[in-house]
Amino acid sequence: MPASGVSAADLAARLSALGLLTRVEEHPRHTSVEAEVPDALSVESWREVLDVVAEADRFGLLATRVNGRTLWAVVRKTVPTTGDVGGPGHQR
Image 1 (tube, rainbow, N blue to C red):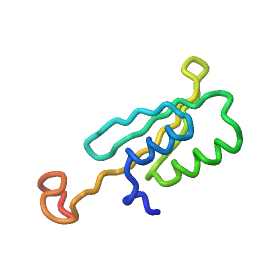
Image 2: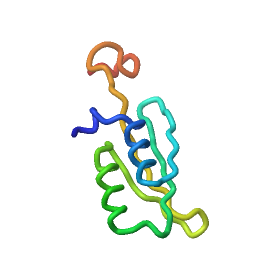
Image 3: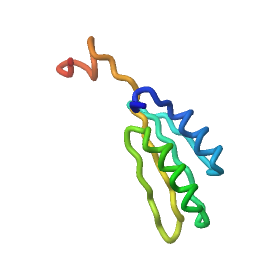
Image 4: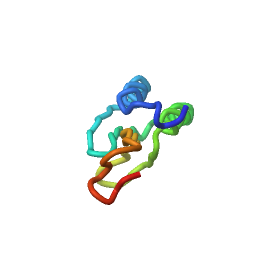
């Protein structure tokens, strides 16, 4: 499924169903989903998690000794293809 058809809320719900604690944040051009990844996540669960985030426009993993592992995914918001996009001089 192309990322344009995927909602961040759907990604968050699917990650939650896999046992991850998620949070969703709205931004002007995209919506982000973050999930804390437990150390004991099985290989099978990792595969399922990666299948979910692969539908996002971008995803990654931030891992630190202090804060553990945070998986993130971004779904871009639809941008109008005509009209005033981003102000004067930014027409498509």
